[in-house]
Length: 158
Image (cartoon, rainbow, N blue to C red; front, top):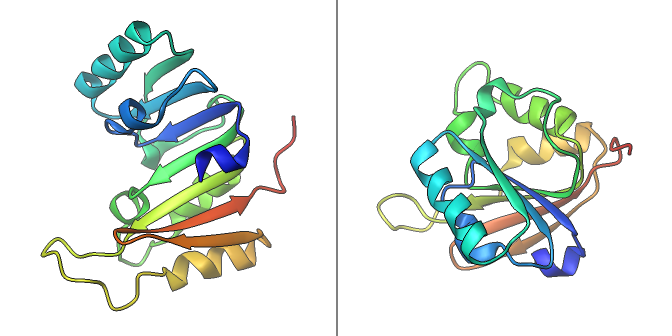
């Protein structure tokens, strides 16, 4: 999916150790998380593999406009964590979609519960309503473990 976007620069928010499996010399990779130990591992990996990239700490609940401009922003299985159910659900998601300077978002949600059972509704209706309200074009891809949304960010300006 990532290769098909043609992205030359990637911002991975809440990356965990994803960059070790995803990053390549084909794109500049900006990895952010709140776990500084994992970011150190990723920075070492970038150096060893000669991958152009950077790592930095970022709390997704306190996102601002200082993030690097990129072609693609990855948000893999993080929105349910940083924007949980409750009266303010959707607030963090809306802020991320409004303030992250990227051409496209690739967002994923798990299709399985922690117990391993399949979710009844792997699509996120609330998330889709937010996208519809923002008039963002989406396409969806489902795998056995994740449901992906590829989103065009029409608000992005160079």
